[in-house]
Length: 329
Image (cartoon, rainbow, N blue to C red):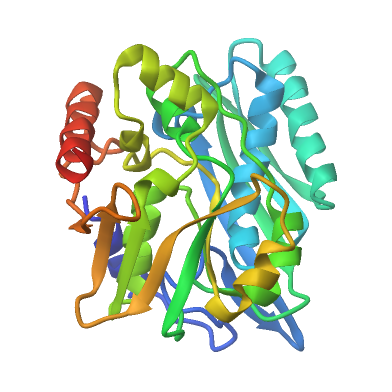
């Protein structure tokens, strides 16, 4: 299934509101106006089977569900304001599950200064969750598209734990909240997107919405989560492979104006952000990888297997390892 093709086909059936500011695929959240007020809204569905969100610690799962939903607002530079949910409880031990999950949801909302308005509940064999978040803007919205000739690409946090969680049922990632970082960073940014489908898919989407641009990423510069580094050492796997997987990482990739790099570097603390590459207008557009900043650039190699629709995880991991060796040796 080509997800972008399917979305385009479905969208064609609807009349687009003149109050909506972003084009299709241009923004992580939908940006629109009601009167003079500009708002952002996003909605996401999650389940363990597709997203790999583990429930070994149910309270942490609740935190992760909110952090993942609010990540779209952060990527657009919106401040979280209101939240709605559809909570599908598992039939087994639903009361305890609901109470523990709610504690995590509440903690993440408090940390984000975001308020629950309401929602709906249901019950089924397994848990499912839909989060909807509404945000406000104190400045201009941030989109995935850019008119800048060149931007430096920075990534928040570290990568791989979301993909490790998706592949290993015994591991549970904990996602970070990024709104405080974005309030400080927004004046220096010309592009933003979250990594809800993994780092590589984020970069591929940025290429799609910026068709005349060349993205260059230094794989060794991308911070690998310590748990992933330890797993790779014990399993004998290349850590760069976790940059190619489609599991949700829920870190941000932002584009910094080169003339603002020094000022931008002064607003974040150690570990909050790392420069991983650049995006610039080019006659040779597309996504390119370097193993190090002195390595030759290699064009991205498309993945054939989408784990959401093809459930052979062994074949999926084998393809990632094969592509990792072809790109990085």
